[in-house]
Image 1 (cartoon, one colour):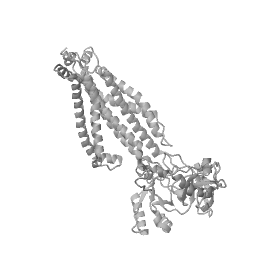
Image 2: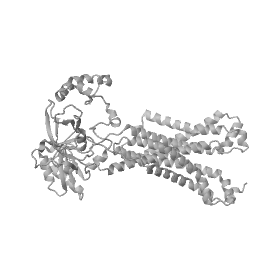
Image 3: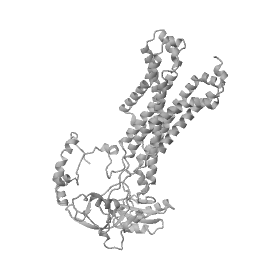
Image 4: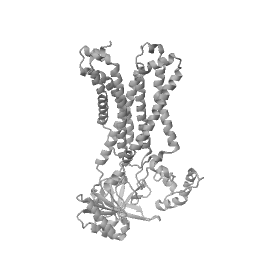
Length: 590
């Protein structure tokens, strides 16, 4: 971490890095590989790049090895902002739809105002002012709702947001601008439509409500449901991928493995501590290691087949220091050769590799092959014999392919892991705590579980799925409110038509079908629009995972069916109400 002077430009400092590399790194490279750094870079086998990264960009913009903790991603900020915008647009569409649909209700008012001398521009200003007043009232209600639901949102998102964090002038200004802009845009079309009515047509009662705007209303309904369907599909895809992650075979057993942190504090007592714990029935196995198959700090260095320095196989790969019990404790599978064993005195100079490493080195039969690695900055090398190969296991996120890995025996006591019995987990933790306090009185006892650490990596995706679902429900709810109002208006407009149909013998079911058919067709069109958009967006999201579930057609069919059912349920009340209306009441004034 560097603290730069106030007037230091990061780019000017980065421009000096090549000189530093040449001065300090090049000599070490020549010692290691017997070639100049320039020659290695030219061969394509080595790449050296140092760059500066602003501290505040790490959380949302960084995805490097050995981060302090799993980061979030700026794309989720963009996704949630886009969804919020969608919901705002859906609400605005409701306002536009209902305003234009009920335009006849204010037609006489407009006609009279025009007759007494009101200009069209004055009427437009009046309707826009009404729209913006509604928007301002909505903002006040929204602020109250935010205050009420913020604790629940914090639980959902895993954050600790407080209202006072947003009492900054730029946030207040943004809220005011969004409020006024929403009121302006939502009221613009209704204002121009209603103010355009001709007084003579209106006052003669010849205006047909919303005829000209019918196609637009239909288009807006399609947009609403297309947005909702995209959100439903997004939610289902995220949940499907999370289920895939949870169910995927990882190549090791992550369940019931307790990790004891700060095991290095035990120092020379580590083996004694481990062996004493193994005397208890609750502890099935135990291992001391520096690394575990979860994304965390890593150790990479150049490892290559003996005698093949500085060629295409001399890649920097994972080097893990483990003990004799590591593979058995974590439930990994040895598929060739054997595991480390205390019965073989030569095992301290042996290694076990994974399948990816064998592939990297071009070995079909890796057993008894020899590997070399550098063990000091002076260029000293140690050679090891391959005694076994484990089945590939995931030690990074499922976003990454499984890389080559080599395991060595050695002293690295950062972590102690125990496979414990499931019968009494709290009792086992108390047992470990008591033993820890006896060995290291006064030192904090810290532990975690391997499966929890694994799922922590996908916390962002879990939150994404939950928030996606909440947004989808909200979008559908807002859309249904508008659809309900629109269905009521259409049923009212067709009251006399329904009365005549009933007089001529139309059944209740046929009338319900008549009123619902239009909305079902619109939702069907929304599906046709939403599916390719959702496929493109979610397929792009899934590309971040090297291991992913396919985009099942069932997800799209389920989302489409859900949208149609929701639309039918929303409109059915008004349709049934209209269908059961006495035709005498509908036609008595005709």
